[in-house]
Length: 459
Image 1 (cartoon, rainbow, N blue to C red):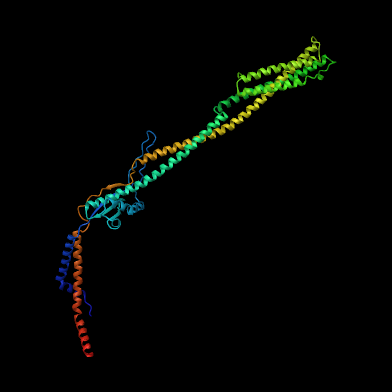
Image 2 (image 1 turned 180 degrees about the horizontal axis):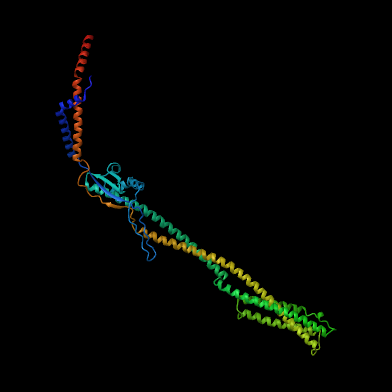
């Protein structure tokens, strides 16, 4: 079979031009009739966006401080919209929309009747298709509504969980605060730490006074010792036969009285730290001290009088002076001993106060820490409660879907153009096919006759 040239192909088309036009016209008529017969489908569009910044406002700002206002704008990255489009495509939203539009199937909503698009302006477009234009608009708006409701549910659930957690934390920390306050109160009552600072000041002042008195008494004690030595030398010079160094100014009763005197003096000095001198207990000790001191003086006189007589002599005068010096020495030593014990008690109390103050500060710090924790948690709980009472703005609808006036399918002019083009292509193929049949008719006839003759020869 020979090969045709381009001119021959054009001639084939020209020769059967009428049939090609008939086929194209028939196709256009058929498409027109089908476009009129098929029920039109309408497509509605709703436009919204999710704000870039979260809709969070504090309701407990300090007085005079304005709440910050951030303009709402969509994010400018395509990756941000991936989760939102994924949520729109879930069966959860499709089921919620299907409840409002029972004639729709969840599968059709997820696969055929709904589509989503991210515009160049980073807005989310929701397209809903239905034979009823009002239902198409309602479905598109329902998707935006249930997307907002679903996001609100996630937000409110997280707020509820946060509220529950805060309430539990407040309850726990309130118990800890009550326990810390109880421990602090018991500690203050047990150790009498209500006025530790004032007591410390008083102890410092008393310590200064007692140290001054101790130095003065030590000086008096030194002077007393010198006077005793001097008196003994004079008495020794005056009485050669009687040696003062052999005087024994002591007895069991005197030693006992001296011990009582020292003990009472120490107790009096200790009480001066803790109570005032007008206290009944201190007055009783002072009275006992005077009585014991008189008993000491009387016992010393008895001892000396039993050894030396001659009251009118100079020797007797020195002896009585020596007695008085010994009595004075005993009093000074008792005062020194009592003061030293008092200073020891003051030092001990000051060390105790320092330790108690540290413990008190730790307990008070613990109370303050729990108090601040409870205050912060309560503040946060109030903020969460206030936030829970308002609906967060998670989606802003820019364009409300309205019933479309023109169907999305079929489009008459587009269908006619497509039908005409399809008819032209069909006519061309028809021309070439008929030409092929004509060109191969002789060959097919020859083959047929040859086959018939071969059949007759065999017969």
